[in-house]
Length: 167
Length: 447
Image: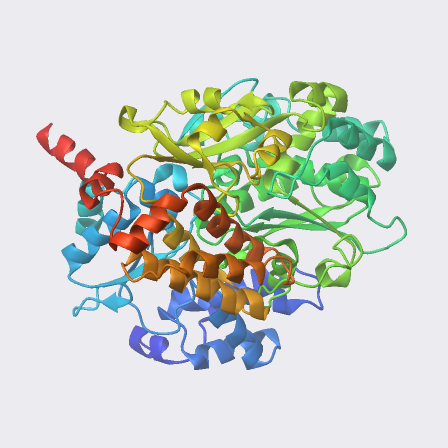
């Protein structure tokens, strides 16, 4: 099966399932549902976003009702329930960041990419999101790339550099 | 990395080497795990461990300030299955201390959790780590592997009868999971909606079992307390406010960062450590304990010392120790608008006063900021908060209300100016210059 088909199928790869198994092992044997947050992240990393069918596949693997997994996926704001660009940039604009340029950093990215919050560039490369406090206010302005990479002190030069690195 | 400075360093002793000093070997070379070894080798009683923590007057570092030793003593002795949970879901705007604690010295939190588990009789624990700091979650997992390999975690720790294992669980973007029962729901694989209390976690916690849940900084202080003794730790601070505390200083200072100082240190000293006001501008207001704490005007804040009792007396809360510093370039209406949006966005939705009230607060502050405020709006805002505070399952409604009430109370004329003149008292140019974003850019460009 080629990569394209993998992305379309709700089924998870053996590698993803192995990662989920490692998460399941952290919890008591009768509490597999505890692994659902990590499992959804693993699924999102593999698929790029979380279609309902993928959420249902995760639920089925963990032996929980699909709606219970969907409740989790829709409650926590870093799960993507719609397709996003190759690079999802989330800029914190909360007050402590804003005092050190968080809103200005977001405006700068908007202008550079020609998109607003919750939009994706026409080439599918970038999606821009407004974030809430990431717990890194001392490094303001901060932004996340694809949920897992925290970028600190994002002044204009640092933003330019980041955008240039994203290919 | 954010800047760090200390007076009497305890928690930050291991931070000086930055990212090069976090491993098990480094921690052991600083005396790490010696307290766990001593407790196990001497077969110290559970009650004696709890008594030492009580003596230290260590108060919960997550925000509520509840005495840690007292909390531990609520755990039922007889229960077979008990848990210890660490709250590293650090999302209170302004707070970034637990991130650095786990980044530079994860083993002090691990040792603190093991000692807590010993004291309350728990066999399993979890550290719930904020989703946005995934690299820190990965580091903590590495630190757990190191501790397990060295025999500090697992079956019969260091040859004793005591067994305990610890795991990391990450969040994925929900402020409400910093509320302890919302966090427990989240570990159970559900929406992080807080539970009714009582029952408190000590009786009905994770998976319905007795659970001790503390903040990261609280656990990280435990090895130091056991090392120096509760009384010596208490004496570092002031009565009822034991020890040192990490303060995350953000906003308009020259050196934002984490500062560890003894409880009772004057705010003026902390501000000086943080490099003073950015650009030499004038201090306007400070939120002393994270965005949920009432704002204080500059003159009130300059008289405060950094401890639970002094800040409470001034009408705010020490909270998580997140000190948000604002200078004269800040429009207080705009600042409040952003905070009100945050609580509206993060309300979990299960209690009507919070779900609806937080939206009302945001929309009314928003219209004042955007020149559509009405003369009756300030009374309206206060009335909405009356219908929120104390009327919900958890404290998020109160947290949304406190900023609104305190901003209006202390900066009423600025709100009235907005309503009357349909614009900010602080000009847009001055506000724009305040963040340093553009100036830093042009300065760097010139260089």
